[in-house]
Amino acid sequence: MTYSAVEIWIVIALLGVGTFLIRFSFLGLIGDRPMPPFVLRLLRFTPVAVLPGMVAPLVLWPAATGGQPDIVRILAALATVGVGLWTRNVLWAVFAGVLTLYAGLAATGLL
Image (cartoon, rainbow, N blue to C red; front, side, top):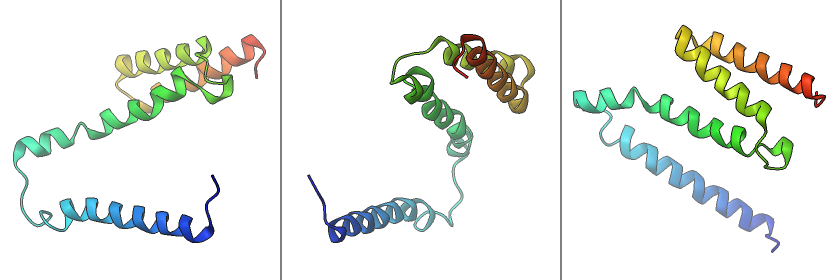
């Protein structure tokens, strides 16, 4: 199915308006009121929930392998989690994951 330029711009505009309304419902309507302590406590976990949701598909179904799980990427993810839990340092965890990924790709001849 082919879409015209006008149809594409209409979809983009509608998505922009929808995104604005979703954000405005939080920031514009209740943004000037203090939030309850339990909401503030729960909002601290948002990045911790979003990041694995973004990374998991890249580890389990990587585009580089045509969507097939790859042991090198799984090992890199495990190294990242392990070093992160051990050191409680994001930078060391990321460094360990990158090092494991590139070492694994080099060892398998895929780099």
